Length: 288
Ligand code: MG
Image (cartoon, rainbow, N blue to C red; front, side, top):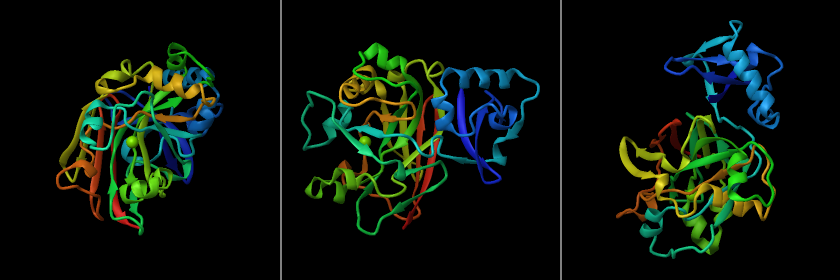
């Protein structure tokens, strides 16, 4: 199931795309028992999916054309967002400072940095080196703590695309990784959440980044250093992962910083991220 968050008459709602058609079912309007926003929908667990399936089968469903709605981030206020640092062989190779990690490396992005498809990435005044990173991100559906990999994988609700926008000059100056990764609008996610049963193999997803139409990143999650079960299990030994948390899985080679010459985002640029089986997340860049 492809779940979208959108705004209609100033209110947040949830829609399901009808495969092969340019329209979706407005779940929130089809059955008032269905949670009105994605976080509540995920937190309600299996009953949300049951009600959603019922709404899709029902002739009472409310249809909307895709162009009629304004998409927003599929999860506008997620729980915590943990991002894996170096997790692709290709990205490890392009980074002259990196060595093969023994354990996964994580840092946090804040919910306040989240923005949606079609929104603007704002260049902060304090940085000249803003970069893009396409990532496959997981949305948790169940709470897990100290979970083995198989159990951790079963706790996944779905998948989305995350742009781990990074101000390199801030990130690397005195190791300010948290600040360099957390300017407002530095965490575009979307365009939708593909539920776990629909995206069968997360470790075979083709990821492509285009900057103003030119391909910059072209990788596959098959290149991961640590697989998804291992990443989630590793994190769950430190902190409880909760429904609505986002775990992002790192970026393949081709980031702007390691290109020769380096490429950084400037006002007017268009960053287009494509993930097979999920869709397209596109954002324009502008001065703050
Ligand atoms: Mg990253």
